[in-house]
Image (cartoon, rainbow over all chains, first blue to last red; front, side):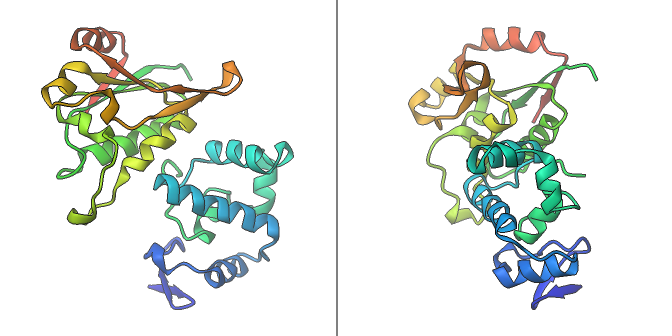
Length: 107
Length: 134
């Protein structure tokens, strides 16, 4: 089983124990994908973590896009912007960095 | 893709079996396909949306919070059997205040839960293309 900063991850790189998450893990995971986390990345990661805390699920991309637009401005509420931050998909890659399970309905 | 009317029937208590959680997962997946989705809560299924659930004592995930996300997924038709509530000594006030934002009405918050008689419920079921029972 692979590890990141001592935390176990599954074959797709998602944390096995969600409570292991910390910011260094997110930074390391991003590094592995050749991404340096910017403030904009953290906005989305923190949003995902808050959403999970509130609803116990990772949001579908459609729901995420709408909510980001509402919270951070219309110009950010589209998949082009989100994919520019998370090229492997804001749901899949974003949730992985945020230490959440793979979103429900994400294939 | 044509839109079909899907109704998910929830008949079992939220914990003790995996039916309730599985139903909710399937509902959320189906929502991604933009179908006309409604939920019905019948028999012990009404306990799934009772306010103030606490799972500390049984070591299971309290997934009742997830029902609050349904509005974001455009799932805003939650029908509850009036008879099932009454048989259990419950009323509308015991249920979670689940709401959605109506896009066509300046995002006004509206209740998603409707309490209906079993007769109305059976009519709603007969209007569906697909009914899935959990």
